[in-house]
Length: 134
Image (tube, one colour):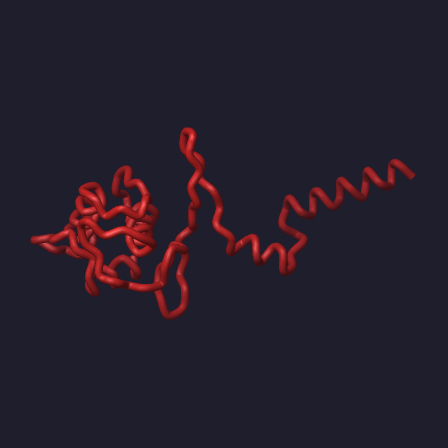
């Protein structure tokens, strides 16, 4: 009897580990944010993916609101994650604060991915379109 329980437990472990057992719980887990640990802090991490009617989406917001230096919130986090996860830009902290590092990253994106010779570091309709299409 103990052998059967061990065999059943081993089979269930393999099935779960390999993703063979799928259902509502697995689907819910797939959409749930994962965590990123960096030093002593843990933050939510989102995997960017395409979403119908939105384009590329990193899990923070589907809105495309104007964003500029000094702004903060989920829209800024979306911008930061889109640049961080879809380009070869160096380190960019996803903290929701549109400071000098985010402005530099947006200008870099505008110049390198949009062909803008005079990047302004402002995320308006054209920059959102390019970020979401990346």
